[in-house]
Picture 1 (spheres, one colour):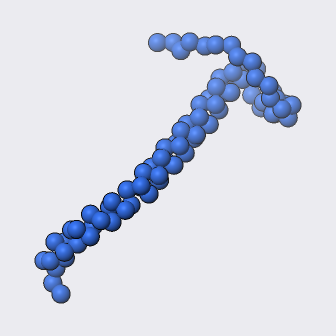
Picture 2 (cartoon, one colour; picture 1 turned 135 degrees about the vertical axis):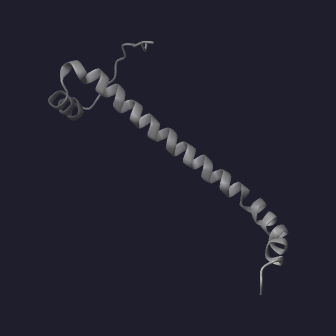
Picture 3 (cartoon, one colour; picture 1 turned 120 degrees about the vertical axis):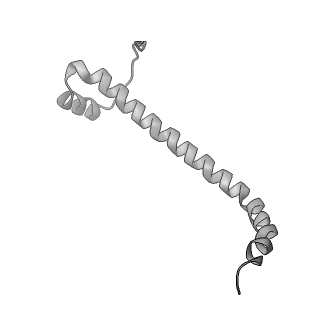
Length: 81
């Protein structure tokens, strides 16, 4: 299934436009910008997920410590001294 495309208008700094024009063929610029945007959005999503996981681990730290205390005796009970 073909992806629907939309025409959008963005403003870029002149130096970025110059680099884009000198490095990417005119017929490939839209695809290049779309792929670069996808890549950056994936990075943002990954960082947000990483932050959510860190916050979740921090929130559960106290609960996990209490559970470990409860099971510590049972875990160490059968270990040789």
